[in-house]
Image (cartoon, rainbow, N blue to C red; front, top):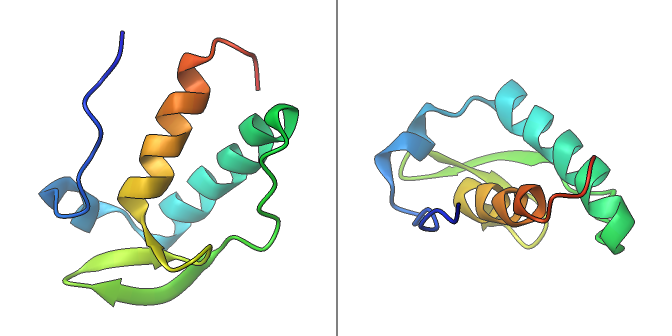
Amino acid sequence: MSLEPLRSHDKILRTYTEPEVTSLLSELHERGRPFGILWGSAAVNGSTVDGRLLVDFGDTSVATLLNLLTLLRETGRPA
């Protein structure tokens, strides 16, 4: 089942904490490895935009991280 992508202004993104995003980044590293998606330096950078955390791989939003993880999860490949 395909979900609609999260938008960077979605209110739910304000609820993510730094430890939660760090855990999501760990999952990204694990799930992305078989596809050659390697962001070893990706981390929560401590900055926020309008209450939303930024992730350091091009100062992207948590929405981008979650959308990428959704795509990787939908591939059906085990982590």
